[in-house]
Amino acid sequence: MRNSANGRIRKRAGDPSAEIRKGNPWYTDDQVEAAQGHQRFTIQRRMEFIRQIVHGYLETHANTSMYILDAGCGDGVQLQALTELPGKGVWGIDYNLLRTRRARQNAPVGNIVCGDLLRLPFRPGTFDVVVCSQVIEHIPEDTGLLESLASALRPGGLLILGTPNEGCFMARMRNHFLEPTISKTSDHAHFYTESVIRQKIEAAGFFIAQVMRENWFFPLQKLNHYFSTRRWGIRLMARLNKVIPSQTAGFYFLCAKASG
Image 1 (cartoon, rainbow, N blue to C red):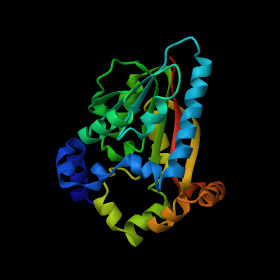
Image 2: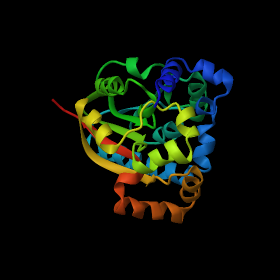
Image 3: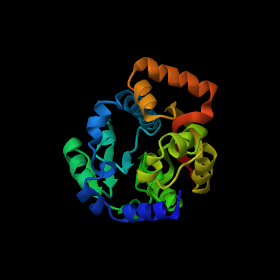
Image 4: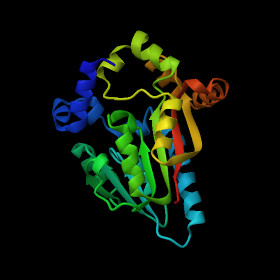
C-alpha cells in the first residue's frame, strides 16, 4: 500500500472520532444488523468455534473462576454470546466510543470500557481467554498488540485470533485489479498471508494449537456475498478450503500462551 494510504490509516487508528463524525461506514455501520443479516452464517460458525474453545477450557478448569476479554468488541456481537456462557466474567474493550455505547446496550451484563488495546487498563495475567476477532489487521502496531494481549493472559491462557487472509492471491486480485477501491478506502493496515501472521503470533510467545479456515476468497465482493449468504454456499466454500486452503477468506487461530 502507498505511503499516503498508510498515513491515513495511522491517523484513523489513533483517533476514530473524526471518522465517526464523517459517517465513515468502517466506523459507524451497525455490526449487529450485519451479523443477523448477510453475515449470519459466517458469524454463527465463528461463534461456534469460540464457544467450543471456551467450554473446553471450562471443563478442564472446573474449580477456578474464568475471565474472558473481547479485545476490540465493537458493537458487542460476540459479547452477547459470551455473556450467555456459565461460570465466567466477561469484559469488552474498544477504542471506538460509538461502538462501546452500542455494546453496553447489546450486552448489558458485560463489563465494557473504551480504551486502547496497546495499553490495556487491566493487570497483567487477568484473563483466561482473550478473543481478538477481525481487529489485528486494523492496527499498525500489530506486534505491540499481540504482546499486549499476551500480557493480559494468565500463563497457559488462550488467545482466539481471527483475521482475513488478504495477502492471498485471490485477495490481491480483488484489491489491486478487480475492485481497487477496497484497498484505497479500507482502514486495514495489514494484508496477511498465513505464514506471516503465524510468525507474528509465535514471536509474541504463543504456540498455535488449532486453526479454523473461514469461507473462501472469491475475488469479487458480490460473489463472496452470494455464497456466504447461502448454507450450500458455506458448504461449498468449506470444500474449496480443503482443496485450495491457501485461498481461504480468513483464519481463526487458537493460540496458547506459554505456561512458564
